[in-house]
Amino acid sequence: MNIARFPRRRYTPHATPIEPLPRLSADLGIDLWVKRDDLLGLAGGGNKTRKLEFLVADALARGCDTLITVGAPQSNHCRLTLAAAAREGLKCRLIIEERVPGTYAPQAVGNNLLFDLLGAERVHMVPAGTDLAAALQAEAQAVERDGGKPAILVGGGSSPLGALGYAACAAEIAAQAFDMGLAFDELVVASGSAGTHAGLVAGVAALSWNLPVTGISVRRPSAEQEANVHRLAVETAALMETPAPARETVVVDDRWVGAGYSLPTRAMVEAVRLAASREGLLLDPVYTGKAFSGLIGRAREGAFGDRRRILFLHTGGAPSLHAFAGALRDPDLN
Ligand SMILES: *Cc1c(COP(=O)(O)O)cnc(C)c1O
Image (cartoon, rainbow, N blue to C red; front, side, top):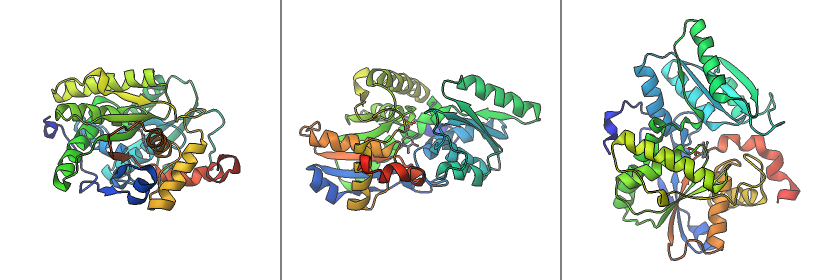
């Protein structure tokens, strides 16, 4: 896995910590640890920072001056792409997809406020079901007409190049686990646009590491999500020139999505409250809250079996918490 040959910008000057969660471990009857990717660099941290290190380096190498990307109204990926653009002196335009009809509020706080503060050159709202690839192309053509040179970043930064960030993270976890003398039995992670999950699976395979990785879906049914993750993991391994991960190494649990992407569930609210009140750890309502509700549910039903030492990858997202205050305090969800 020779990732060093790919151009990379550095946005985090250190490895993110791996910390024990002793109180939640006692509650759940497992030995639970957390990899703190919520502490990655750029504005507010989170998993997109690792992908952007490769995606932005590539855009710069191609001489681009404007980043264009797409996300939901509370997109962490859009926030971090804007932050990377600001850091590099690039311009940035966003396509915001109203994935759940009626959820876009122009005056919303959370990431929506940060789009404004981080200096988005243009934020273009489109309804659910819009052809996003076409919308990105149209925006790129608009940039060219204005004399700029656009770089399109796919949703969530989940291209093979972006997923390299999480193959590198798998190597970082392996090195830390070795240093700390900690043999993890399983890794649990939120699975959305698939780049994080796919990069980890490709990285684990490249290291010939027999670490089970379980993705908790935040949007799609298991069969569809497993196919998406596996396809991207194979493409990422091809880019790294490492062995293609086996299909069985991609496992997705889709029971924690609730009514749909970003729609609150009781289990999510319980997970966010437990992590905050028992460990001082802030999760988010859309990704890590649901992923952690899956981890809690799986622990309670004995799904880990005799695998006791579990690592939860905290992929960030807390900057959107305030935008979901209503749901988090809703008596029907508490
Ligand atoms: C984007 C995101 C995820 C999901 O990662 P993917 O690579 O899109 O699957 C998880 N957590 C947070 C906080 C995110 O912003």
